[in-house]
Image 1 (tube, helix red, strand yellow):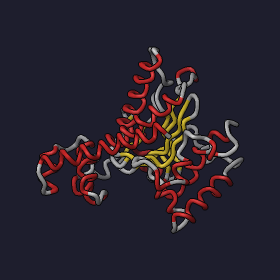
Image 2 (tube, one colour; image 1 turned 135 degrees about the vertical axis):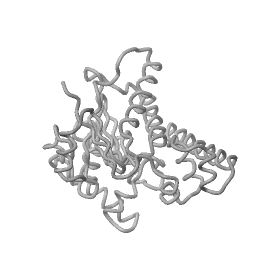
Image 3 (cartoon, one colour; image 1 turned 60 degrees about the vertical axis):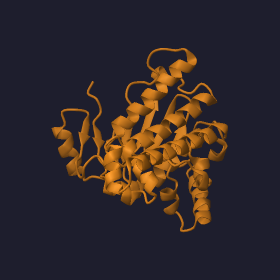
Length: 289
């Protein structure tokens, strides 16, 4: 069977799902769920990506992820691969944890992000596991309604910013928006075998790329696939974070980063260590919650 086409380009937004092999559970306990969140955090940092929504179910998970660089395949390879290895170690199992490859659907950010994010956090409600998304610990819903405490890899601000101008009003509007989605039609009902939801690319572009593709990954080079140091500096106003993210992208050495920012190698190294320590601290807080 032909593998599904993958479209990757900088700034792409995807709804990603991955299921357990033979529909077996991929989360057996809370330790598994926390471990997955830790791997997700590391994959986001390593591959310069941000999550807008997520939900862990029993035998699958949902992600709404934005790849700042064109690195979806690398991101998912790290997420599923690292998590599966850890799962097998913890439970003394061997073999494949996931059923084949993940499914990724391109999503038009401005038109569909809100709808897909709502669909994702309502999965436990649709499955009859809880009456309200607030009652499900293992999704982004609680982080979004308490967005000041959200981890660095989860972007709640863009989503909330589409609903109201002030944080309090935005959270109230988000709660109402999600509640109105209970029982509503899925925004993905007609997209099971589709390549994209909305039109982040013209259909002419998609068909042209698909017809030429000889592999399962197509990189649309609208800009270079790795952010430049200037882009890191512009996107992340905090210098330490910009330098750390640039280094963790694996595209630049500490010497190159130091030369661009006008600081020493040691300054870059310390910035990276501080940033990674902050990530570990976030993970520890999450594990205790």
